[in-house]
Image (cartoon, rainbow, N blue to C red):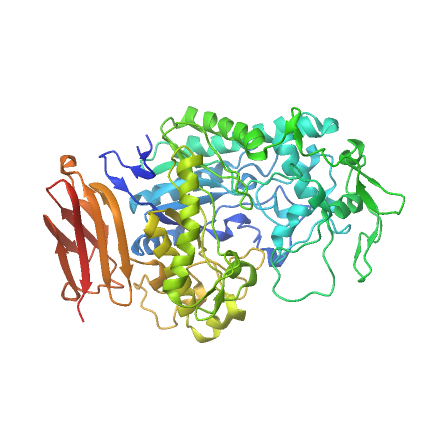
Length: 611
């Protein structure tokens, strides 16, 4: 049952004792929305027929999926972070599972295994649900909370198909649902009991997936929950802030604050001096008024503006300061672990905290736990602009030019994250569950020119920095139906390494590179399984030089396996192989090198591309 991996010293260890580097991709971006009817966010969101949807065909229809899996494997990825959503499983109502969809997921996992692809399941969420500007939870959850989704849009309580979708975390439906999910019993007396209803249903849905896939030998385990939000927990004066997260151009009106959204959601009209107006018709999205107002969190002040009446309401926990991840997320993670391990006893657990907080701590010796935090270059992601020759880091403030300097900048960040994982996460392996770049950067310049060289620089720098600390990762993302007009089919995002619009008209049907974008930036030689602990890995695609060093363990009696892409070494005559010890055999048809070394201690392998 399962893939039979464990972890040690930041590495995944296979059943033979070899050190395994996991490098893969999220599959796929459009899995956030239904396949039938097409749920691409530019088409709108249906607030009426939410029961009658199907996610069968996400990440790709079964009659097309083999080609996509072949391409992913061809590019050297060895693991999929496979997206499912709670809505996809349980959209019709509590306990009503979509059995055909679950069988579809099972078949996708089986086919991935046929290609040697490991899988871990990602129950994906972004800003709660499709009806709040994201994805994840079923519609019926709002009924448990006493919310009226039919008034979300008319009242301005949500913004749909929004390039600045992260700002939805400030809005009442999103912040409320996350607060109820993690700590509703404690912080929302009027809705006591909803927390257990929500968590129990979510866990039941995840259990249903585990029951279908646990038997497959390529299934590593399960993510606990994608990018969990703490809702209002831990927040106080920042509820007055008026900020955007992603802003691509100057906008004449400032955004509204979380406290203003609270008042508007309760039926108040909020106006700004710059002309901005929220909820002009004074609609309340609550069935029975705002429970946060009833709890004494906020009120309308004498000046007619909303104000916090208890600034410590969401800051305290058992007469001490609240630590959101430790106090409310960790207990939930333990419930996830108990649920999936009952079905899949030796599965790995991939845990996440809020992507915007640095409070992910795990004091537990469980060797089957992975730190699956996310990392993005927010300069590129937020601004959607990048010039390799003139880049200013928002992290350090440095002006940077070229791939070498950018890789050093990223490596400095990754060193901090690596040390945190070792010191604060019980030594769990660090796997970036998401990282990547936006392909529509620079106003979609590459779509017009076909030149993805700038994207390749950003990706090469990322992978160089990851190699420096042997950080595992699943790149965001591979979307089978990505196109230039609508990207990944969700909220203007476009981060897929594949696009149907990048397949040349005269492409050879057998060319697995067709449709790939900036492939040279992520398709690189790398160790897959090592008979000993790797200590150094470097690749320069410009010179075609690859170096691998490891602390060899000849007692394992197995070869070290290295992925060698034909993209960089097209034939046997193009590559020179040098080893300090043993013999290396290269099969370029399989893009695999097997290195049998016989001595203990430091040994090295070098690949050099001949001119």
